[in-house]
Image 1 (cartoon, helix red, strand yellow):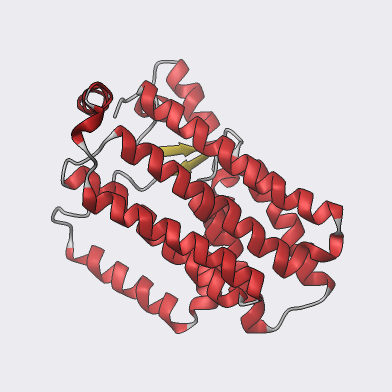
Image 2: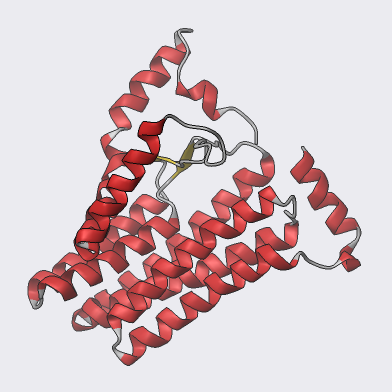
Length: 265
């Protein structure tokens, strides 16, 4: 309710201005996405992939900073969506097309367009659910577009590192682009990690686990990043039977995750 009241106040008072810090972070994400597009066009695919990851980091920070500093606004929501469409829709689509889809002709650029279109649809649905108050804090409905973009970027880094080329690379990116496009507009649930309390006390084993995970990623980042992103992409369809059983129990009155999904922000 507080967030919706802030939106109403901003609409009724359009001359109040905008908050600087979260929108600067959003601008950094937008710049990273634009840089990824330019790098992909110039053939610097590793630089483009790294820029997509940078955009994802800035995108994750802007929302958290806005909530921590209580500087959320309707302007910030709309600006963030436009930035996401560029950084996680247009940029990875052009990267995928320039790197592995050009040889398919019309099929290749149609695959890239489909990815951009499904990203836009994914963002529109997410904003609609958020504004209506029916969005879940525990799960995303459909694959988040930053995760889809980082999956394409990590595939580019992996293939560049290992030296995969030729038909295997082209077929792989084509299948991945179509698959990610479908998952973004699907009803598959993905864990959001929003319920993790980053600023509260945790058992000592928690920080140990985080350090070990960072160490594993640092050993071969181009390999482990792709492994992490690919596992997350598969986690949605892989956990569908579990969610189905939980929902069935909820209908029977035994309690389920669906009760959590009805919680309002």
